[in-house]
Image 1 (tube, rainbow, N blue to C red):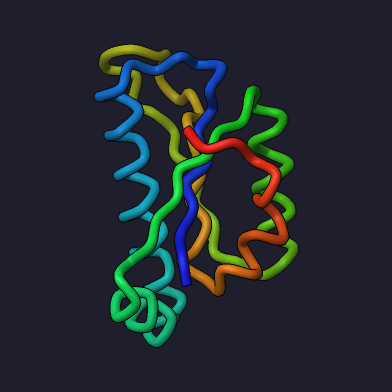
Image 2: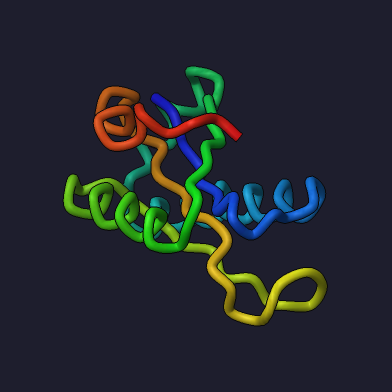
Length: 116
């Protein structure tokens, strides 16, 4: 089990901002999964140590492609839009969260992405 957060590298976010966006995506996706009643998946992920991976893409278009592939595979996905209070314009899409889910399911979509 793992969760992956995919960040837009083209935004060149400062490290602190990027970390905050990644945290938003991780929490948001778990909350979404609770609403979807995927409690067992969350519990299994928790029991295995809550593995998280942060990867990067170079554009909004690439991020959208990964999001579509994950949704088509039935994975829970959330998209993070920044409020625009500091670094980027309001509504800027910064990253997506996928899972937690079986590692093989996530890797089928994201195995070629570079780590952040």
